[in-house]
Structures are given as C-alpha cells and as structure tokens.
Image (tube, rainbow over all chains, first blue to last red; front, side, top):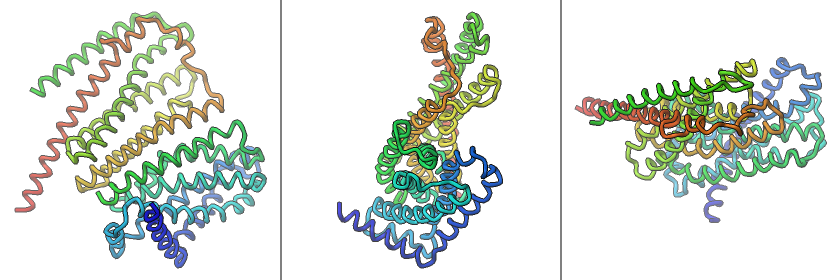
Length: 227
Length: 228
C-alpha cells in the first residue's frame, strides 16, 4: 500500500519538477483562462446583476477549458523520446503512474485556478472571499473530479489521431455532474450564502463522484496504459 | 439460416408495429393534450430499449476485457450504435412533443437533458473508436470508455434531477397515474410497442454484427496480402 503511494509520489514530483522548470503548460493555461474571462465579458454585460449571479457558473467553464489544456499535456509530454514506454515498462503499476500524474495535474490546475480567482473577482466585481474556506473546499473537490476524468481521458487519447479534439469530446459529457455541482455551489457561495440545506446534496454529489471515479479510474487505467 | 431468422424477426416487427399503430390510433384522445399524447407509445419504448442497449454494451465491454474475444467487441459497438439511434429517436419524439405542448422545440428538463448527455457520452465512444486504427487497442480502449460512460450515466441523471427539482421546470405527464390498463398493455404487453422495439434492436444489432464480421475478415485478408 505504502509502496503504491511512494511510487505515485515519485511520478508526481517528477511531473511537478518538469513543469515548474519550464512553466509552459501553466502559463498557457492561465493565459487561456484570462482570454476566456475577457471574451465572456462580451457575451454577458459584466455590470449587470444577473451576470454577477451566474458568474460562479462562468468560472467553472473557464476552469474546465483551461484545465483541458493542462491535462492534455499530461500524457502527451511523455511522447517525445518514448518516455511513455519507459514509464509503462517501469516496475510500478499503471494505477500508481496514473495516480502520480493525476496528483501532479491536480496541484497545477489548482494553482491556475487560485491565480484566476482574484482576476475573476476584479473583472466581474464579485466578492468571492465572503465564504472563503467553503469555496476552497468546493474548488478542491471539483478540481479533483476534473483532474481524474481529464487525466484518464488523456491516457486514453495519448496515442490516437486528433488527440486535441478527442480529449474535450470525451471529457466534458463525463464531467457534467462535477461541473453542475461545482457551478451551483460556487454561485451560491460567491453570492454570500454558506453551504446549507439546499446546497448540501450538491456537495454529496461532488464527493460521491470523486470517490466512484477514483476507484473506477484506478481500476481501468491499467487496461488503458498497458493494454 | 441466420438470415432467415433475421428476416422472420423483421417481418414480425413490421406486423407488430402495424397492429400496434392501428390499436393506438383507435384509443380515445387524451383530455388536455389531444392526439399528440399518443407519442408516448413510442417515446417510452425508445428510451427503455436505449437503456437496455447500454446495459448490454456494458456487459459486452466487460466480457471483452475478460476474454479478449473480438465477438464481444463487435457486439459492444453494434449495440451501442443501435442504442444511440434509439436514443436519438427518443430525443426527437420528446422534442416534437415539447413543441406541440409547450411551444418550444427543446426544454432543459431532467429526462431530455440527461438523455442528451448520455447520447453525447456514447457518441464520444463511437468517435473514440474511429480515431484508433489498431483493432486490439481500439477494442480495449473502447471497452474501458464504455464502462466509464455506464458508471457516469446514473450520476448524470441524479445530478440533473437535483438541478431541475430545485429550479422548477414544466410539469408533464400529469395524467401518468391514470393510465388505462389496455394502454399500458399496448406498450408493455407481449405484442406491445416495447416488444417490437426490442426485436427491431435485435435485428439491427445482428445486421451490424454481420458487418463487423465481414470487416474483420477483410482486415485479416488485407494483412495477409500486405505480408506477401
């Protein structure tokens, strides 16, 4: 059991180290998030109250799109120099490899989100700090769901044609529960309402989704990576 | 022999559907919705058949991963395509019903939305298959994704239902409780529309399975030709 986590952590630190040295994926992801935030301002009038009400939902669209950019690179970065073959041939289980990459992606995506949050607050005039720790909880749970599905589909699509097109096509329908729950919770928290009777079921859906898909991904990823 | 059975099954489907359509046309119209209510006789069996197809697809995918027998992969793709067609029929009939009753072609209510997301999931499955050239890899990845999609789909339904109960939407099927017995039999009975739909799904799946068999044969012949 501890061997599994130790192996996964080795992969996590490898990925994080590689990314922190080049910062290419996080920079691209953050720039993309900024661009989407700006473009949304043309679709909806940012000064309207109605826009502020639904801005929590917009935020998760931004995270989903920027996240896909990051998650795509997750396995794709292993293609040059055949490092993916080396990783699969390494004496670790496919599940440990997947978990290590998922955790690394999680921290990178969380970093992009935490930097985007103040920008979002400024652009849309939203007081997102009012329910700060609850918002952080939603961010943590929702991002894990996003990362899980995204990393799994990244492993699935790494070697196929049209990878960049296939990843969003496969990921977004599967992410509907996570995105829905995160959007509803974020919209309510950003409006200043703490998590209460109405929003607790959504939190349960988020937790349930994370647990079910962590188990499912760890089981199925071995088949996807090794064949 | 197999073709004979399929033709007989197909003929049975046509006879059943003709009998059912005549029967349904003879039923009195529903009080508040008029004649369009009768679309339920097709809308519901289409949905049930699509759900059954997705369950068979799950079983076929799991069996393929266990046995590596390509027949299960062929069954998975055939039944998913057929299920997708029936789900599309469900969406279209639902859309027509919505247009007549509520005046709009689409409403984001629970069942239509979750059916659409389910459709997108399985369409993604078919797109994934197209993108992979190598047969074993294609079958393995598709099976893994099919299992993923099946696990996701109840969670999708639950979350959309929660979303829609909190945001009140249009009330429909308010006369559901008072469905007369012979109407229920027209859908669920041994000669009902559901039986006809399931038989139609079976025929279509077997036709598609035949296509998959031919494709595998052609692939292996092509490989032999390249090797020589």
